Amino acid sequence: MVEIKNFCPVIQNVMKKFGILFGILLIWGLLPAFSVLNAQTIPKPKVSGTYFEENTNFRVNYKVMSGDSKEVISSGKTIFYDGNAYDFVDNTDEVIVLNFASRKIYVLDVENRKKWTTTPEDAEEYATKLCRWGMSHPKEEIRQFFQPDFKRNYDESKGEYSFTAPNYSYFVTPSKPEKPEFLQQYRTFAQWSCRVNMMLSPGAKTLYPRYVVNEVIFNSGSLIEKIQLSIKLAKGPFAKPETFLSEYQYLPRLVESDQAIIRQVEDYLVLFRDGTLEEFQNKRLGKE
Image (cartoon, rainbow, N blue to C red; front, side, top):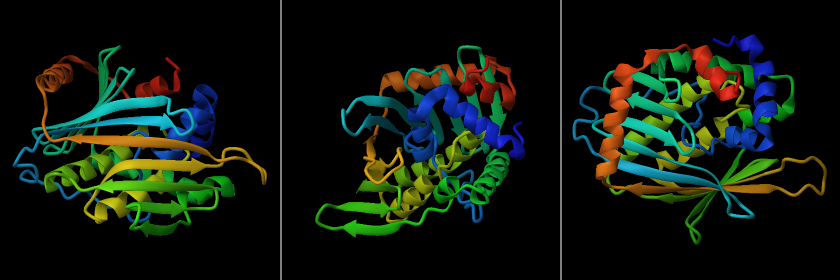
């Protein structure tokens, strides 16, 4: 496991390996797996054996686009089935499985046929240390993301929330879930997946601003349909902000192919050999 004192070199390695665009994805939390948490008051998901007893199944498709060209940067899907969540990012061989009833999180490396297992509690402890590290960082450019100073507003005419900070802003179009269970399950998925992804990618600068945005929307009883980030990457008075748009589509049912994928993943959980956190961290860093 990467120690807190070594997070700075890890962050540098991530940015060197994947470049500024991947760093933006990590900073913003564009991928659903990269939601965030508050290092000081981390809420624990209220999950019990009967929480998902209705077994409401649904699917979320998502894509991330460049604001200028509308080019798709990333896409994927999250399948909610029988009280579990299965998260797939297109063009990768990693799958994350959240078993809410047993309070287990599994990360699968399909290419190398390995799996790594953790719990929400272990992931929470790790992520808390990481957030505290960022909040006390000597550089303001890092601290500002761990301690966002948002001006919040809701424009009724547009049906849009805005969260404005000095160097970056979010604009969110919310949508009401077709069933309340969708919001409950997706919110728990966001909380759990944020923790495990902070473990897997400790080089992420911070995802706390996105967590703040998520919680405001969830607390209003809504899901996120669209979210746009406007952020200044270059310094200087004439630097032009860059924009990125993420869209989510909530489908109230599964199809046969979804169930086939789930059966395959369940086989992987049985057949794959155990791996270590360090192995999965190195895979994301491209150090294999």
